[in-house]
Length: 413
Image (tube, rainbow, N blue to C red; front, side):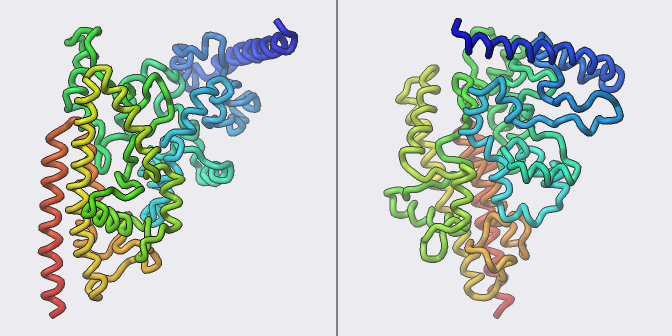
C-alpha cells in the first residue's frame, strides 16, 4: 500500500477510535439526561465505531456547564463520511428548499415563527442548504436545530437507512394543501400495494414502488422531476393556445413582465429549481422516469401515461389563464388594487392569502391547491385527486371568480 494512502487510512481509523472512546463519556451523562437519544444512537451504525458524538457535535462540550458549545451539524458535516450522497443531494431540489421558500413573495408577509421558527413553511423547507450568515441569523433567533438536512429523512440519532427508504419518510412534508403527494400516492394502486407489503398482506417478492423508487432511483439523492414544482417551463409549447395560456400564468407568477421579458423573480425560480428552462433539462428527467416505469410496465405504456398527464397540465392551464385574465382586467379597470404595487405579477398568484379581496384569494386557491392537485394527481396515478379535488374544484373556482367579477362591476356601476 502506498505510504500516503496508508497514512490517510490510519488517520481515519485513529479519529474514529478516539471518537468512539469519547462517546463513552457522553453516553454516561446523556443516558440520564436524554435516554432516548442514547438509545437511538446505540441502535445506529454510527455507534458501532464509525462515528462518535464528537464526530458530529465537536469536542468543546464536555459537561452540563458548556452544553451551548455543542456544535449543531449541517449537511456539510455529513459530507465528511457521505461525500457521494452529499454531492447528489446538492444537485437536487431538496438542497434548494430554503432558497425556494424565501423566493416566494408571500413568505415576507408571514409571522417569523412560521418561517424562521420552523412551525410553518420553514418546518419542511429547513432541509435546504443555507449560507453561514443565514445559519448565524437563525441561531440568534433560537433556531439551532434542523440544519443538517440529512436528518429530515434519516431522523436523528438513529440515521436509519431502512427508515429513509419507507414512503412514510416523505409524508411529513409531502402532504396537505398544495402538494398532497402522500395522500395521492398512498391511495393509489402503487401506494396500496406497498402498504400491503408492509402489512405482510402481499408477498415481499411482489413489486410495489415507494416514493424513493421513482424519485430516488438507485438511491440517487438528486431528487428532481421533469416539470418542476410549478409545472411551467420554457421553451413555450408549439400549441398556440397553450403557449398563450402559459404566458398568462408566467406573468401572474411574476416570472415575466408585461412585455414578456423575464424578471428577477424568474432568476430566483431558476436558482430554486422549481422550473425547467430548456427542453434538454426537461427531457432528461422524463427519460429517467420512463426508464423506472419500464421496469414494471412497457415503455410505450409509461410514455403514453406520462403524455396524458402532460395534457392535463395543458387543460388546467387554459382554465387557470381565463381566471387570471378576469382578475387582471379588474385591476386594469381600477376595481381591484394590488397589495404590492411594485410586483411585476399581474395579478400575483404567489402572494397566497396576503391579498385584499375574496376574488384574489379564490384565484390563489385555484392555482396553489386545485391546479396542483389536478396535475399532481395525474402523475401519481390517482383519478380521484385529478378529477374531484383538482379539475372539478378548478371549474367551481372559475365559476365563483366570474360571479364575483360581475358583482364588482355591478357595484361600480
